Image 1 (cartoon, rainbow, N blue to C red):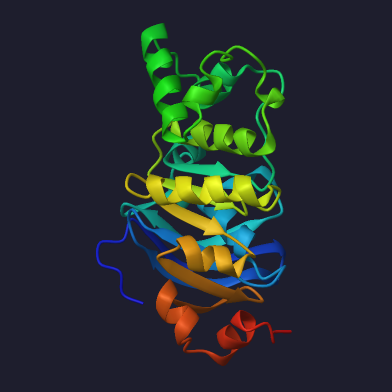
Image 2: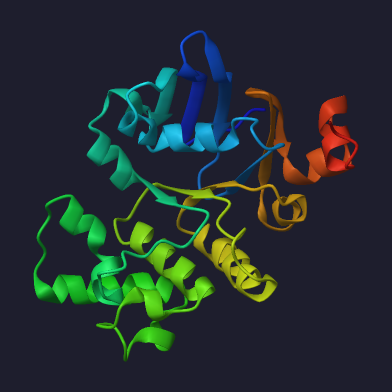
Length: 255
């Protein structure tokens, strides 16, 4: 799969939770800028593990070992300060997780506080407004900015979490099954939002929902047992997969 001028490059990335047994096995892939790339596969295939490595989340657990190279704009993020990496690669999780003690306003700019970056009030106000407008939430919450984020609906909370990730102006947005805890209407809102956001951001989304991958992604990766089995343009993979295992997975005959 040839991508010209990739923003992100995975080079023989392996990840193990226990010595001698890899959960991800030598995955190599180039990720296109300002496109949506879906990572699919059965439960336990290593897709979330791979996504989290890009954000250096595994370092929060001493036993997890990552080898290979992950290059963001040509710079190996495995050898970069983790705080800097987490600013460049924003993460959105499966369940909406606004900080419960913080207001909507403070949730949006939480990344700056956590990184010890102080901003003038005018700049903070501007960032909050811009980030909430980016996720289509501004008009819904502009009169309640100093209320807790937890009073919002599930779909609104997830959009708040996306706004929090976007406020740091990341190069890449990493999303780990961001709609699996949401109802169909909220899911639809998030999918429409992602299609808008790819004009500005590169998005990697882990999804177990094949129809979601088909609807919103430009490229798809199919993983099984820690290996990258196939990686191609989504339309091509869904209509004419090159590997039998991909075909079996997409037609529900897998496993």
